[in-house]
Length: 551
Ligand code: F6P
Image 1 (tube, protein in one colour):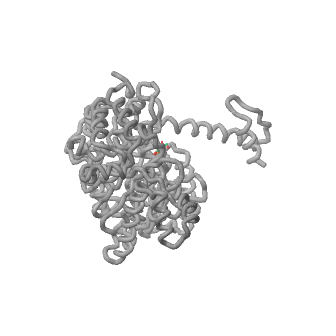
Image 2 (cartoon, helix red, strand yellow; image 1 turned 90 degrees about the horizontal axis):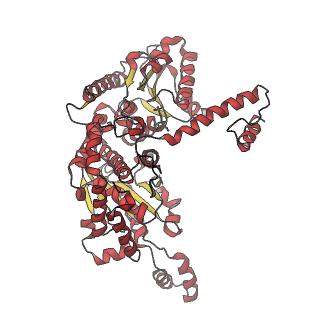
Image 3 (cartoon, protein in one colour; image 1 turned 30 degrees about the horizontal axis):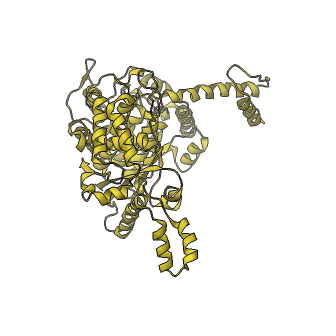
């Protein structure tokens, strides 16, 4: 099989990029009236306008060709059928099954849908007991607060969705999240809580993650100190893990351990019982709708032709920007306060999945892979870093995300119109920019003398031509959010297929964990008064820092 860069379609894209180098996106609009209609698509309640990217019909055609030549249709089929596409860990990748409407999906002789239905039923029961007040703490009081302890995928997805969907006016249990190993995080969270009415969810697929275990252990001490005995642990802790025995050993009742499977990657796990915090915060109906929205998008992904396929298009436009426009970073700009944590969630989803430079066969990929993903909620971002995108000298691609309707209904309708106008304005300004002549004309019209106007105009021009996507949903309910998140998951999958990387492992994070263990033992040796010469693999800087830390 030819490498990616050997494909004729890939080389054709390079030729198109060279020609388009001279065209601005604004000029493409001037040439083509129907550009918005041609370069927008909608499915599963999500609308995407990608017309503000420097793409043409020819570019999109070549990109679809690349996708076919890289075996995308076969790869989609392989993932949804449960083939072991995570080859380096010899695992299937079946987070899509967690939201599937299929009755049966047999993988290695096992119908995974049976287990999924069982866990959903178990979640529903716990959610009902806690939210109705039937679940009692050891002293007989109902649960008022839930704390999810987990990190990475066991935190970011559930936290982001719970923040987005929990109704602030409802009297459900308050749900909070502790992830950071910094004791401050736990301390600050527990400060306002009462052990008698707090339930902890220890969410860890492996149940070996150091940060989660130390936070869980400290939380258990907090409960035991206040309420005594191990009985209290059984009433105040549940777990979500694929390592049931470790959770039981921690002191959690086996019947309160929710199952995860090795075919759910951590960053793809919010659809599993790892989403328990979401269901507790918002109700099981909301969680079911979230799954249904993701299933809608998955069905579209599997069935739609490529030129109508939302995740395929979003992925290919991303490939175009990354590999042919040399754009290194992707800003995620939700103009929606509820999605303030979306950029952090997408950082893990994208960068942990595709931040790789060797393909699944161990060869160098040969092209740039995942962009640096970052961002924040609009309109705040306009008053911090947008300046650099408008007048700095780096190219950045952006995804703007906005809901047509606010949750606030008519109460803050004027806020919402202003929010949306700002969102559209940023995308427009990034594309159109402002010429020096325009700036000068405006200054002169404002009464500035022509000499001064010229100097000022040079500083007031904006080059524009920064590409962006606009993603719009009608109303950011659970169904739309489910579809939106599945859209990004599948986009990341498509890009992984094109680049040839395994999007489902994360070997890069292992080294830091191992080194932290070594450093911890060096610190312990130094604390014991032993002189600590450089051990094999230790460097002078790290040892110097350890000594400085010891004081
Ligand atoms: O950061 C590495 C990682 O393995 C992530 O992929 C995962 O989401 C996170 O750690 C937490 O892992 P676990 O759920 O096993 O505690």
